[in-house]
Image 1 (cartoon, rainbow, N blue to C red):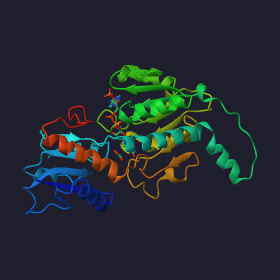
Image 2: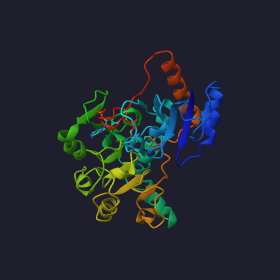
Image 3: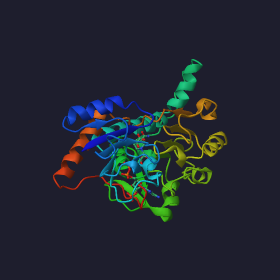
Image 4: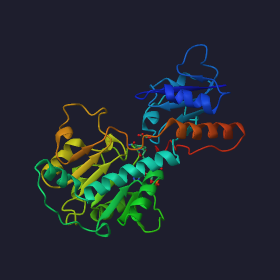
Length: 314
Ligand code: NDP
Ligand code: OXD
């Protein structure tokens, strides 16, 4: 019984070394071949090559090395009865909370304007609204969105959230489903997207949605912050909306195409702030520990998780 690691876009070596350290009795393979195919019971994956996992006749569980499982679910060859466990753990969540708080505060405290002023040696204080006057709307109140909501609330912001089903988070106004979307947007000054990529959320961050954000807010225009998935945003709409004043600024960690192509106008837009899909980069130690624990639970006949609901798509 062994574990296959298959990773696209990151260096797999530290992950293999961490599994070997945490579970010395578990053989780890970095590639699939005719000799190990039948022995592989677990796969730890990030963006696995389509068709690869279907070649494993004895695969019992797929462990995603991140939170978003869109790349796995896009592979229709994976047998429907193999459970998929998501990467949800405290270290990853804490890093996302940091990234979201950083960007909310960056826009709230007018850093884009101060950076522009600094480049011209201008000393010009700008009126600063209180956090309690600013409403942050979080799309997706799951593991990451709800942790961000808690932290932003502690910083003093008004916080509301939009999810598929209603949530009861103290001090966070909850809106749900299509019926709740417009009311949610209408009071949002800073929009944070932490949705999974599904058929319903693809291209959801578009011009028509941007127009529904709170127009007369204290920041002088709505802000969009996306750390969900790039295919949730229409980048042409983002740029047009920034240029015509529908949006004041944007912070983006994810993009329609990654790496963001060098000729993307987003790179040079003065009110767009870019990070290269690193918002919640976690250490192999944290994620591997969670996986090793789940394997131990499975082998002891206990339930494992958090499991992906393939019908829902996340
Ligand atoms: P969860 O599954 O815990 O939460 C997803 C949330 O989105 C839930 O609240 C869910 O609603 C809501 N949701 C899903 N579909 C819809 C819909 N159609 N309409 C309204 N709400 C919807 O996911 P996580 O919080 O763990 O992660 C969220 C996403 O963040 C990941 O899927 C990934 O894409 C992204 N991510 C990005 C990272 C980065 O570095 N940029 C790192 C990690 C994750 P409900 O609660 O009602 O089911
Ligand atoms: C994730 C990511 O989904 O890093 O974990 O994007």
